[in-house]
Length: 186
Image (cartoon, rainbow, N blue to C red; front, side, top):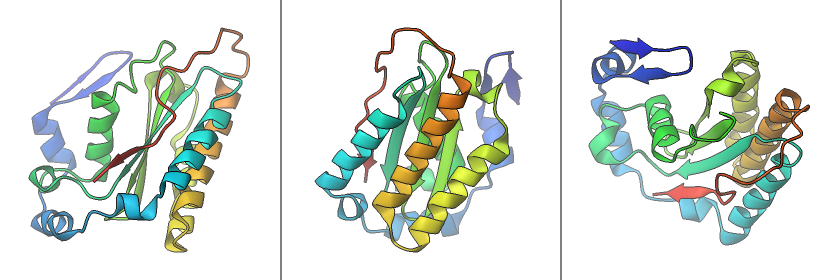
């Protein structure tokens, strides 16, 4: 069951089950994964990513939130894939609640080496999925070379470029609605 309006889409529990099949294999993979997010991203890396977000947000009203997660919590991994988890965090962190509907969540799951980008409705109207898929692919290429910091920074700057195109004519006073510091989960 999906409830849609012009501005948003609400995914209800039955619809989640249609999209994503429960997986014991996924649960086991995440259950056995050793928390490593802080091992892959030092304080200096986190600071560099925060600086990249600040630079990428300059000149437009778009907001970028970076979330790096070692693994999906075991109590959720059976029913959630990375896409559903990214959508959950998009809602929980209030990325959707920016003044101009200009929020973008960049989600990196280290256990599965997957990247998800969730965009708000204001940006969805003006962009195509292929743009976001290309950004994810660039990041995955860097991750395969074990260049984690560079992967996130490439993603942030590419997202900033897309937001700059979309909000290029915005002359409103800029204020930071979301933290620029990456959120590190497990």
